[in-house]
Length: 139
Image (cartoon, rainbow, N blue to C red; front, side, top):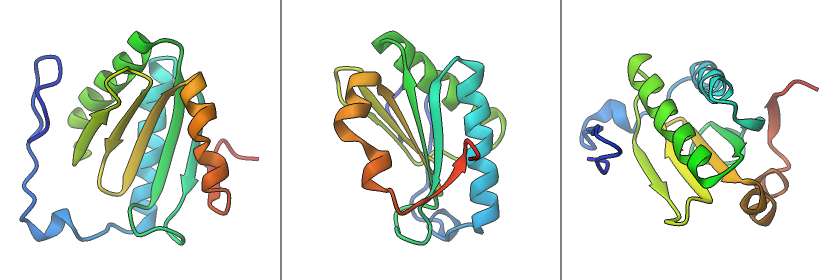
């Protein structure tokens, strides 16, 4: 059970086999691009999607974006959670750094990172995962 986030709860059954069986990469890319749409609807900035399926066992894709303020970062996460629930994209985990600079949402096959600009520069995930294929934006 994820923490009650501004009035709604998300349940995840960790013991079902389908929760740990990875989806096909094309489904993961489709989910990642849907999540990009949700982020862009709330004016998320500098959105990048990386295909990490060949270099990581954690997930298939990272969606990385920037919010303009702590409030914007939280609003982005809340809206993405609501939209994902409407679109039947399952959420596994949600966490923040308590300061509102970085929120992570785990969708099993896709992990969304929402940063404030200075936190994004500090952690520099794009460089850390530089061998991953960039799916969005296209070159």
